[in-house]
Length: 524
Image 1 (cartoon, one colour):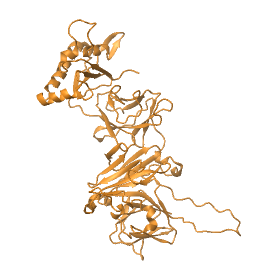
Image 2 (image 1 turned 135 degrees about the horizontal axis):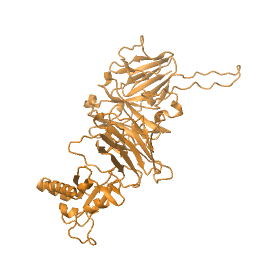
Image 3 (image 1 turned 135 degrees about the vertical axis):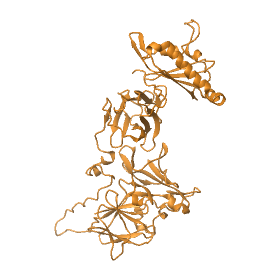
Image 4 (image 1 turned 45 degrees about the vertical axis):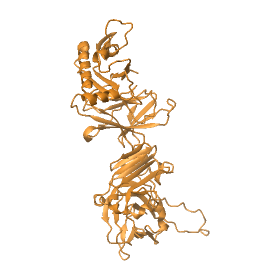
């Protein structure tokens, strides 16, 4: 594999700001001198014909001991750093002017904590680029292990053709936080111009596999079986055009082939028949019970509950509405309950991913990699085969809620036709649907836990329902309880203001009712 990034160390340097001392040793003692910057550039040309160099590298980064760079900034406002860069550029132009091919010589001098006193680290090569003054960023690159916490990796400029990202600076242009594949692997980004989509390749190709996830807009890089000690590990790489411009379709290069399969949350057999592109991945209604095999005379018939109420999503509240209660944060964990299905659990207890709303109504995703603010709508794949989606709240509800957190297979309550059931904070019979009725989810400003998160926005007796063939009939039991009717796509139909025993409000099958934190769906 070619060397895309050349890293060298100049040792035993008396004055790290002396350009001539870094560039070339004095005298002609060829056998005793140590290789300096000029020698390194001469021995590693950009292009050559036979043994003769025809073109040299023109962009060089120098890393000096951080303490000396700090001292220069304090005492001379960085004058010695600027003089060093300008002097080296002049020497470079003077000695290699015929090998530049019209390229501009650029030097960048920075401080680095890992550089020892009396040393200077040098970086140049095919994948080292220094932007021109005022050059605009074309792409931003970020990485994640769980699709929730994204760490910045680097930026790509319009004239920056090659970039290598990997474990450390010894083998790559930029380091990737949480790189799981060891020092021998890397990802090569190829930029062929403003109108061409960026190309992504892995190195070496027999150790890593890279595929583009069209549904989520990022690359999934995995270790191939039998070729790496971290088999099964994955890294997500997201490449976005600056200023919010959409990415062009990814190029099908070698080992970077766009994925053609469906979204991961629709791959399981239980939801294989759902229409593609739906905003929420939710469980199907229960299939009819198997017929009992018996003779006509011995047949026994028992009623079967064909109606169900499903907790389809959690409505994340704006805590600023409840400032007088002292509530400072609401945090919800999602952990595996059944295979790869993620259901609400107490935060920090076996959760794979969590979401938190703070007192300023800011929404954060939380994983083992840290905590990061997220936007709405957005989707996450914290582990293979499991996905989470944050849905935008209808505008008419935005003063109460930040987002709707979809539950792929939330708790279910059978609803026998003709039976009236009451939903509310004081109704233990339906407690299975009220997954936030515990002190672990809500925190006060003093750090203490509240009695129950349900105290925010849910009355003790909120409403009653009765399942019927045409839907769920709703009766308001509290004048202060806000109720919202959403359609199957979680769009607002109406706010339920009038719903009496004489004239109940009808929720059709497949539609939702929002009360407090809970988005309930009626399945007929």
